[in-house]
Every structure is written in structure tokens, then in C-alpha cells.
Amino acid sequence: MNRRTPPPLQPIGPRSYDEKTPNASRMYDYYLGGALNFAADRELAERAKTVLPVTPALARLSRSWLRRVVNACLDEGIDQFLDLGSGIPTVGNVHEIVQQRNPDGRVVYVDYDSTAVSHAQKILRGNANAAILHADIRDPESVLDAPEVQTLLDFSRPMGMLMVGILLYVADDYDPAGLVATYRDRCAPGSLLPMSIITLDEVQQHDPATYEQVLGLVSVYDDASEQLHVRGRAEFAAYFDGLTMLDPGIVVLPDWRPDGTTEADAHGPARWLGIGGMGRIG
Ligand SMILES: C[S@@+](CC[C@H](N)C(=O)[O-])C[C@H]1O[C@@H](n2cnc3c(N)ncnc32)[C@H](O)[C@@H]1O
Image 1: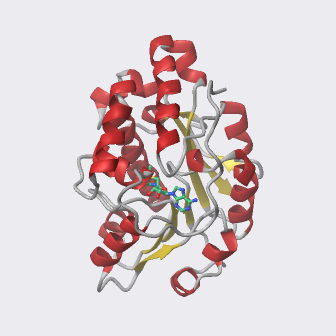
Image 2: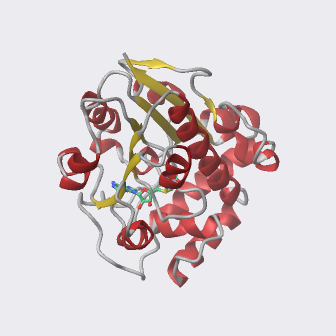
């Protein structure tokens, strides 16, 4: 799908602090207007914006989708969440959304980036119902069996297993569908699994100029510590095997239960780039 030779696979494991290599969490923070990024991150993020000017809009649409799916989980009575690839805390973090509506709600964040982890540790200090785990989601046992996870979350009850804006960083060699199945199989019936990816399917059909730009964005991320893996709708749909899809199924992010926010982004070229859906176990 990409006209390039991809860089070598990144080994599995938590990342140590490295401000010289641009990384996904700090670049995402930069797109969202955050301050937890370094010169190398900003330089590559600016290159990304030159290639695909709506990159920040895509980040905002993804963040808005995260908020809507967490609220949808809360509406369904979910009170505990495992957030895989949680990123650098910014405005509207999952534990804030959850605990505003349910002060006893529990959230465990997982990220392998040390900047994301150290900042989350700071803002979670004193919060007995939320924690961050420094782990690589491609090693599910290191996540699911971690004391932070086992102490705060009860796997015999339904939970929200969030995979928002994370599977696009998992190379085929690490079997994203198999990983999803491993996380799914540890969840109790009634659990909800929202997942999103970047796809070329929609944009190719609706906006050929932006399609070319997305190919350019994928190449830019070859110089980051994680690469982007765009996938087709059919491949993504298979991640939901064994789950019951909730309305409206798999759609472009702005069309998933829109709430009137991020309207400008939703009607620009970024509209076609992210797709997501939410499945229920049982
Ligand atoms: C684009 S951010 C998404 C943040 C958040 N989920 C959201 O929707 O706003 C992706 C995050 O996934 C993290 N990440 C990427 N690959 C990972 C892996 N294999 N294990 C753990 N975290 C990973 C990155 O460090 C980054 O912070």
C-alpha cells in the first residue's frame, strides 16, 4: 500500500527517555497544542503538517471520538477502563471524563513512552482510582498481569477496553488482530471495545489529493520512533470478530454519534481519514 521501504521493526518493550528521536506521543501532543514536546518532535510534526496540512485536525477528531466513546461506555454502565496507548495527558483525559460522572470510576492508562508516563504519574498523584502503566501493548501479558492493572480493575466485571488511535502503530508482524483477540478474551461479557485506525479507503474515494498527502504522512513517520500503518476497512472489521457491533457500526470518526463539536474539522479533508467502531462482548 505504501510506496516506500519501511524502516526496521521496533523491538517490543517500554521506551526510555529520548528527546532526540521524534515520537508519536509528543508529536500528537504538539498537534493538539500541548507543551510536552521537544525540538525534534516539533520539527517532524511540522514536516507532517507540510505534507498533510490537516494532521492536527485528524488529531482533534480522534480526541473528540475518544471523549464520545468514553461517554458512550459510561452511558452503558461501564465504570472501569483500560486505556491502551493513552498518550500524553492533555485536555479531557479519560479519568477526568469518567470521574466527573462517576467519582468511583477506575482508569488504568498504558503507554510505552516515558514522557507520557512521567507526566501522567504527576497528574494522577493522589488519585486512588487511576494509574499509569509503563508497558508495551504488544506484550499483552505484561499489561494484563501488571499489579497496577490487577489491583484497580476487576476482570470478572465489564470494562471499557480502549484501543483509540493505537492500532495504527502496530506493525503487521505484531499481529494487531491477534492482539485485539488476546485483550478481548480477558474481558468479561458486557465489556465494550472501541477501536479506531487510519484508513485510505474513504479518502481515496472522496478526496484523491488528500489521499496522496496521507501517503506522504506515512513516509514522514519513517523518521519517528514509531511508524504509521494504514489499513483497509475490511481488515479493520475483522478486529471486531466475536463482538456485537454497536450503532452506528464502523464509520468515519465524525459520523460516530456526533455531538456537534469539532464541526469545522469534521467537514474538512480530515473527515475521511479515521474510522472507528465499538464492539460489545456477548
Ligand atoms: C496518537 S497517541 C493516542 C493517544 C490516545 N489514545 C488518544 O486517543 O488521544 C498514541 C499513543 O500510543 C503510544 N504507543 C504506540 N505504540 C505503543 C505500544 N506498542 N505500546 C504502548 N503504547 C504505544 C504512543 O506512545 C502514543 O502515546
